[in-house]
Length: 256
Image (cartoon, rainbow, N blue to C red; front, side, top):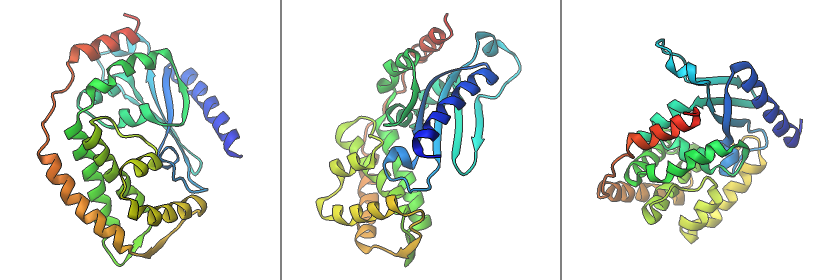
């Protein structure tokens, strides 16, 4: 199937999930490399959704699953979160929802999701966001890019969170999903040709594989990890949004 046919199939699968699981899907997007703008030709489709169950489901004494893992194969990776789980994680500042909200590829959205949007920005916490992306960058860097021979695609899994940190520090808002937007706003001009060339290879090759370490990028990453940690440590810690606001949204989605 071509990409257009796959997108139609994803939307059909969402209808199937709603019928078989007795849920309402209120938002579904593409996550991962396709939404970041650097998918390889053989990248799978990472569909992520938020769903709401009938009210009586939430009144059960028995603890029930709050995720739906629908399909995982070479083409599709489809799963979703219950709205209760999503709002609980939002209170703890889990950055995932902010990314799902800003994905440039939307398979389905609803007025109900617009209700959730009304509180999203107020839940964003800059210091926690910087620490999240900083840890992501550091983990990938130490695991994949410290040797002489490295997995070249992992540069994007380090550079994107670094640029996301810089975006948050500069603007105090959730970073955009698209790597190109982050790069244009936050990457030093002298590094752009190197990254653009690597990006072109990534987007046109099924697996760019391993290659020699790119010293200019490693030096940049080393310096940024240290500088961003220093800046994050000096940021004020914000308070989470009040539970009452999230409770109100939850009850509204249940029709209460």
